[in-house]
Amino acid sequence: MEEIIDDNKVIENDNDLEPEYKYNFINRPWDDRSIKSKVCLVALLIAIFTATMACVINNFVMHYRSFNSATNLNSEINCFRIKLNEYPFVARIHSLSSKKLICVGAVVSQTSVLASGVCVQNGPILAYMGSNANSRCKKGFLLEIIDYVKHDGIVSKRLVLLSSQENTAECAVPIRIGSTLDWKSKVQIIGRSSNVGWTLTRQLVSLTDKYFKIPYKNVNKHRMFCTKHLARCPVKAGDLLIQRGFLFGLATTSVQIKRNTKACFANLTAVRGELDDLNLGINFESVAIARTNLSKT
Image 1 (cartoon, rainbow, N blue to C red):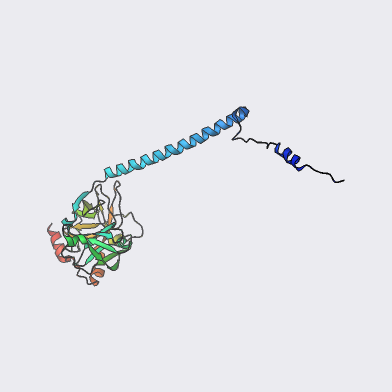
Image 2 (image 1 turned 45 degrees about the vertical axis):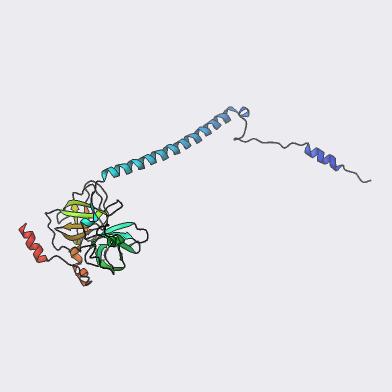
């Protein structure tokens, strides 16, 4: 005879079984814990709290230090600023796309600007020179033609001659490249200002002697010279070195404010032949006249 099973009774019995809840170290009630478990839990909470507070304090300290160092740096920098139109042979070179100031260059002919090789690493460039009160100068000049000049006295290993299809005579006056330095006289470093606007920086410094040590590797010291007694003003790559109204060099690399820091410059007389061969109307100081004038001083 077939046995009849009451399914409803089985289901009812299954529902009467309550699932067994198992506690772990985290969710076990406090009163059910042993002394050892309570000590471990308190130690864990203290460790988490300590680690969290350490992260918060560390972030606060790092933020304060960065703010404080930036404040100190700003207080240390003391650049003498001049207007761009006071030096009509200087061009402020900007990226055409971002309008960001890259470096400064020297106007060496009515259509050309001489600059460091680092100035052309950001695509097409625009040069501003003269006074921003002049609408033509304010528009800037697009420098579309690039001629490279090898120079192993500069970190970038090259200078660039940037030329425009437009004449800059309305805004700029070309500077001649000097031939003979007066090692006993001071020189001017004309650089780019960090300020927004048509400004430059200027500092008067001394030349080191001819037998100087250079702080750079892979550069030819015989095709460069260095300056000392820098002001509290950084020198940027491509800044101009001027003496007696002539252009003698471009900064080899950027130099920040440090004690006993020297700034070195690529000697432009070393590439006089290469610049002359480009036939762009670049003028040079007469060697004979320069030596005669120096002998009188």
